[in-house]
Figure 1: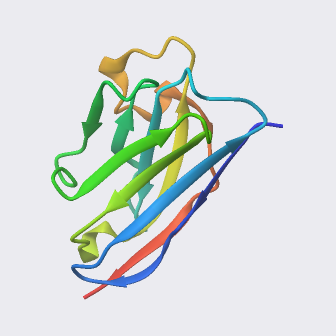
Figure 2: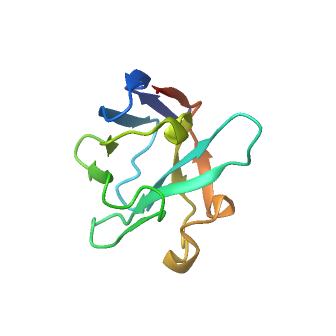
Length: 127
């Protein structure tokens, strides 16, 4: 059974940092692009960051650029999201996802490009 399990969420004050992890089990995703998305209450799920299998290409949403950093360790089948200078508007459930085989990098910001999803981890930033 393929699973993506996120961890590292929690409550943090404005300006603080958190590091999210997403561990994959059941199969290796070393050949897949991986992404992070988030969904705030009452809002649609939105793209946060994505990384190719080799870490050669990385993309961020404008809202998190220069504050968040995505990375991966293929040997551990794990992807990370380092979040710094957190703001209340970063409050959301954060999901990691594995890109579908043959995913076009030009479509990395679209959730339809991913076919495996974790259950999500809550991040709450207090003002």
